[in-house]
Amino acid sequence: MDDKKRCNWVNQAFPAYTAYHDNEWGVPVYDDTILFEFITLEGAQAGLSWSTILKKRAGYAKAFAQWDFYQVAKFTENDIQRLLQNPGIIRNQLKVRSTITNAQSFIKIIASHGSFSNYLWDFVGGKPIKNAFRGVSEVPASTLLSDALSKDLKKKGFKFVGSTIMYAFLQAVGVVNDHTTDCYRYTEL
Image 1 (cartoon, rainbow, N blue to C red):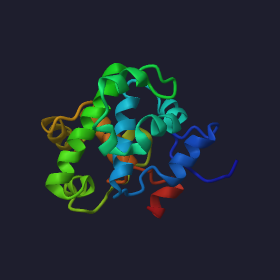
Image 2: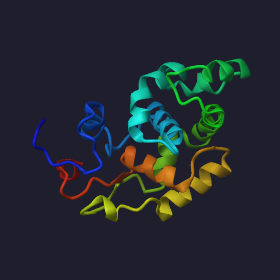
Image 3: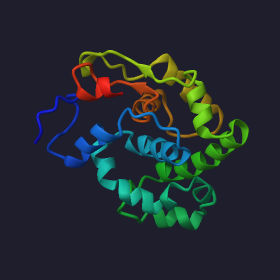
Image 4: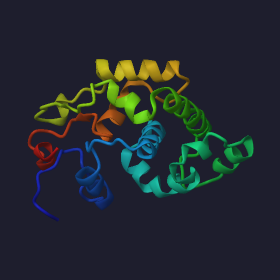
């Protein structure tokens, strides 16, 4: 184990969790495929721990066509029934169905904005918000930004995109840098 100071939510006993914190969480993402992955995984996490989702991440990628949202948007009822038998994902019917609905809505946003990335980053003028929280207890569960994103996505047909879920999404994809000020990643990002 190294001696780097990390955000105190990181479960360092679970190496994938530490790697996720160190290499992905809070890093600005502009790739639509990765954004689709994270909007799906954050929705799947609702009511569960992030470590549960990380353990199933590879299963999700396999089940959802390596995050090809064009393919996912075409999934049929047969695909849904197959997915509900797949132990590699969270087998919640509403969450599985929402992934397909969200893929369809994701494609509509791409058609109107050129990319989902353009749409998302327009909410912050293209520049990440860098907060300066000293501890996890200061980090909000939602903000006016996540409220606005959630409301707009719901209007566009998305499911499992409540404000708290969207704030976690914004943090994960680096639209918001919420590494605590004592975390080594805070200054790196």
